[in-house]
Image (cartoon, rainbow, N blue to C red; front, top):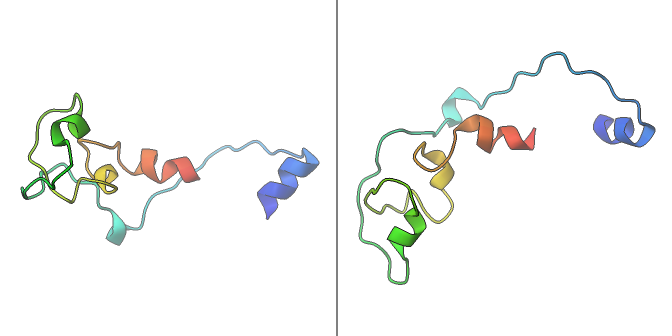
Length: 84
């Protein structure tokens, strides 16, 4: 891997420009609300929401898909961008 070689050899390059984006067919960041469903037993929905504006529960938000919604995440740059 080139990056491992550069780090190990301490031969760093200056990055002038970096562009990254998800494939158009995989973008899932939504500003709309998902359809409401019953809150599962044992889930403290108000606690999970924290200080965010109230919205009805949907399994599309939790436990792991929260980042696909602007109300919880910050879009592609903060989700995928952190891995680049």
